[in-house]
Length: 302
Image (cartoon, rainbow, N blue to C red):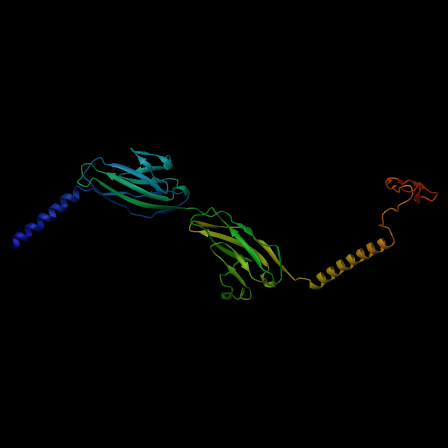
C-alpha cells in the first residue's frame, strides 16, 4: 500500500515537472519602476522557463486610447523609436525617458513549442518631472487689519507639486501657533494649491516672501518679493472728505448766485424778434408805434 502511494506521488511530481518545463513563465524584478525625466530606465521582462528556442517577444504601451506597439517584429517602434532597445532576452531599456513615457507597459511572449505557449506581465512606469520656477503673486502693500492673499502656481512638475512659503528665508508653518515667530499671525496655508491667505495682517507680517514648488524629482523657487503693511490714516481720510464737501458746497452756492443775477437767463423777447400771430378770419391787425403792441383794425365781417 505504501509503495503504491509513493508511486502515485512520484508520478504526479514528474508530470508537474514535465509540464512546468513545457510552460512559458515570465517574471519582473520591478513592477512599478520610476525614473527622472531624460534618465535611463529598464523595464525588466525575465523568462523564467521556456522550451521554445525562438519565442516571439512583443511590448505594448497601454494608455486611455488603447494599446500600441513599442516593440514588434524585433523592431522598436512608436513613441520609443530611437530611444529604446531590447536587452536579451526580453527586457525593454529606455535610454532617454520623457514625461510622455509615463504609462503601463505589457511584455508578451509567445512560445509555440511550449505546452502553455503564452505569458505576459504588466509594468507601471512613472517618469518624474522636476518643477519649473513657479509663478508667485505677493501684494506690495496691505492696510493693517485687512486680508491679503499670496499665490503660487507651477504646472509642469510630475507628480503634482506641493508648495511651501518662506518669509525672510524661514519656512512659514502650516499652523502659526506652532511657531513663536508666527504665533500672532492669522492665516491659512494650503500645500496643495500654494495659497497663503492672511485673515487680518499685522505689522509683524511685513517681510520678504517667496514660494517653493517641490515633488519627488526636485524643487524650484520664485524670486523673493517684499510685502509692506501700513496703517490707515483715518484722520487724513476724514479731512479729505471734508475738503471735497466744502468744495462741492462752494460750487453749488456759486451756481445758485449766478442764476439769481441772471447770468444763466435766456435772451429777452423784443419787438424785432416778436412773432406776429396768425390772422384770424375777418380780423386785421395794425402795428402801433410801440414795438410789439397790436390792436384790432376792423371788426368781424358778417
